[in-house]
Length: 221
Length: 221
DNA sequence: CAATCCCTTACAGATATCTGTAAGGGATTG
DNA sequence: CAATCCCTTACAGATATCTGTAAGGGATTG
Image (cartoon, rainbow over all chains, first blue to last red; front, side, top):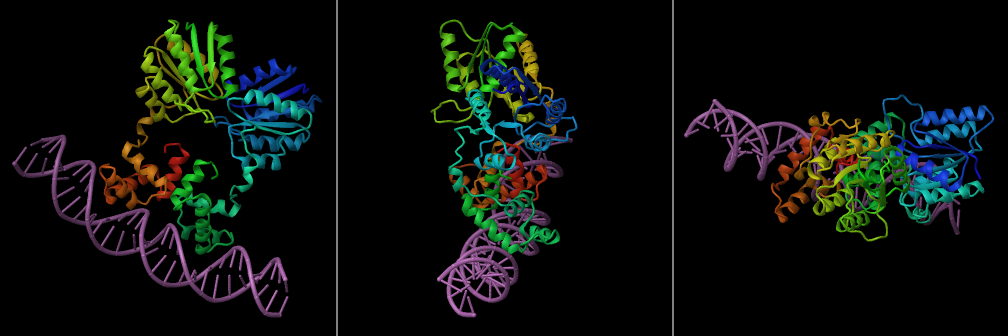
């Protein structure tokens, strides 16, 4: 079993709960914890320099802002940074996110080894995840339906650019002008119109306002 | 100090963390925990019937849905239900919510005794809150600026009705018709227009789409 | 009780949104 | 290489949005 684990999680109660559970259930000798991404990064870097590296990182995605200046602003940035200095480290993400396509991206881009969705069985699932990841397998919380995700409509970069500008209060004419200035193509108002109308169909929205409401609520923009 | 406490919190890790911390720090003899609102309610009811009531409830606001049928769907509903059977019980809410006006409402309507915002100091704050609430004082996490809230624009019921319909894709004309049918007054399209325009100013939005984006992101609708 | 304030409502005019039609052009197919 | 498909673009017409003006009416103020 893993001997040295780091937990990065900004909620003190959750952090504490994980440490306690892992100490009791899995008998891991060294569990350290950090409340900030930057500190977690430094700790992993130092451990590696001292030839006593961490074997597993358990991290959240969202970290609350506060007055402290920080370079790494999210679990994703933390993982990216750590993977460049210690690519072999195992990573399990423990977060509230339940959007399958976002979790899929974590496995594909961040090359994580396990995903545990915070909920009524987090701790049991986390123990299971650690067990499987130790054996070079992957783990995803059963509540996340990774299969049905194939039918879900995917927003590409162009769609997202349009949607973000709309949520920012720009009219389609203004977006067309902005795209032309920034050499984003296609850029005609008509094409933007067409794209947004297609999204109405995909997401069952009657107009732009409802579309933005749906996507904002789902955290897609 | 309190002798009998119930914790209602659906995240197993958080729940576990709170129980551990309170056992160690405050030496409270009886700490029970529940992952569901309905079960928390029953436990409090039974304890009261047996003349061994809980003295303090620590609860979250949001509870994840799952396949289980449930009557009480949120911490707020749980508090309301409990206050009707045991008005004297002390209540501390422990949640991610950081909107001052929503927290203010909890104190005014749900008559809670303390509010702890989940974060890097949750456990320390929770211990402090329990200590103060035991002495019949109230507690609010310092990060919540309850004072500046006075300047924050408040959405009344009428504003909310309009905004929810807009987010649901109805045009202003359709909203006017719906209001007339449901005898919600005022109901003219012109008045609805005016209200929404005022909200543009309040929240710095250029149009309806941006307004709904802002309010949805902030969780106000 | 007259003046004032605030809310509701109507209406008008300039834009913006939404839907549908159609043309053109690059890429793919047979 | 002709046919087809898909994407981009333009344009038109019906609605919807947004802003501003103004009238009326109830509540408050002096």
